[in-house]
Amino acid sequence: MLILGLTGSIGMGKSTTAKLFQEAGVPVYDADATVHKIYEGEAVPAIEAAFPGTIVNGKVDRALLSANVVHDADAMKRLEQIVHPMLRSHHQNFLDDAESSGAPIAVVDVPLLFETGGEKRVDAVVVVTTSPEVQRERILARDNMTPEKLDAILARQMPDAEKRKRADFLVDTSHGLDPVRAQIREILTAAAKMPRRRP
Image (cartoon, rainbow, N blue to C red; front, side, top):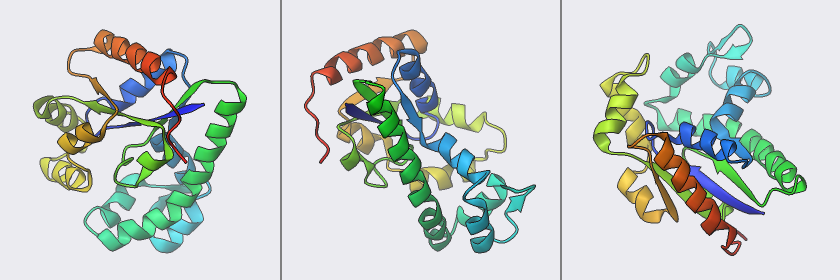
């Protein structure tokens, strides 16, 4: 089975692209959805111990947790040490299930793929991109988003230009869904002929 890593900076249209891969019949692992799941279950005791007061009604309150870590690199590291091992185990289970179902290609949707060295664990990388103007407009339209918060998020992410340079495939989401569907079909055709690259 070939594994495609799907990534892209905030506001590029990565979640929509992931859904369109699913629509094309490809199993997709969603790192963000998995984080939501563990924030409602197995990560709660460790996060409460490391960041007291961030648990509300038995679940991690993402806004409170974000306020604790967004401007504090050490706190972010502590959080990653709790969350990453749990994510790795969910990720492995997903790949085992996809492989045993006979899927020729699986997609892992990981926002910080390059930032966490995840490109070494996939066979090819798909980067989702759009223009900086479209990106900013999409993000600032979200609830609770401010220009300052956006700048803090972007500072943690590798610049889009660098991601595009490292990509095996690009998906441009600037022009609506049909062009994205066409790009996905081309990627799946090309990926089917690729050699496996991960160790």
